[in-house]
Length: 438
Image (cartoon, rainbow, N blue to C red):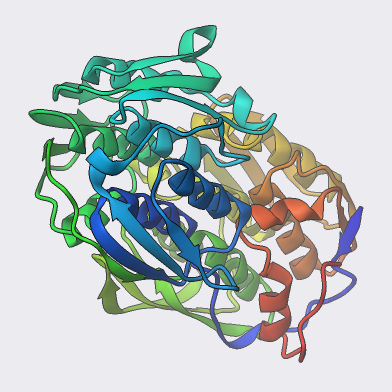
């Protein structure tokens, strides 16, 4: 049991950076693997999820040399024709992005690929990729007929077709795009609402021609991405914990720099502004088609809001952090249309309601969301993060802001995405040398 909080409520000030964007890191490695030639990627996320994708790229025959700090990669792309079936099972660990996107690549590779993950990942839904990959011509099986991992993918000759996804999921869309690039003919992918578009931006930056409308992306198979030179921007899903903390702690004035500001990922910033947060966002450049810039957050008084509709895909990973903000706000915050939270690394709705209740906040679950009533009368307590890195980070945030002792059962779960969390918080507090895991 690891303890956070301990009356550490001094303001967050100055300028900080967060680790590389996890979503972009996964995609950059896979696009580099299917490109023809050598790609260089800097600023990679160092978490365990991206490590699983690095291992998968190597297993499929694409050499990948890493720097000692694992933030830089030199990937020798093989093109689709140069990738080979893995000699062993591909273990995605806790990473749904790895399993789903790599399954899309494996659908193009003649032979059999077997993909699995840890106990949590083996409970996550996979029919959402298995069914459309079958329509492209791949053979996909798994537990419960392909609904659950392990998945067995027999790839090879694929043919383009029109696909409609059941959910607005960038993982699903990306898996299908990566498969469609290796297919013959044109494939269109239509979502119920727009999900994040990192894969589309990266493919276009590497020379792939896509057709894009609001909810549909179209690709002509047989295109080979050019090698990429990319510096991955900071992860807005990590930055949000610091930005919420700066909004809630009196006297804070914090700027996160070199962070990705893709509009399909910035819904949480808009919600915080609606709640009354003083945020200033500035786009300064592009990297691989991605807008990159800074976000400044200053201490603010927040009001409850309603969150739902087509905005949910733009902030679904940030809802745990927003729930902590909501518990400090005046009035009720209602999140709906977020049933996807039920099938993340944990049932995040249940985990948030339980954890908020433990710490003295009022929250109740909806079938597709959560209602949080603020402001909370905060207390300390023991949190079971359910093996979910974002739940662990959310309640670490609660401890940092409230100053109450919060004990996270398995703090090491943050190694999935943001192992540097406490070092960045310490830097923002002006604590020299940072602080080890609490």
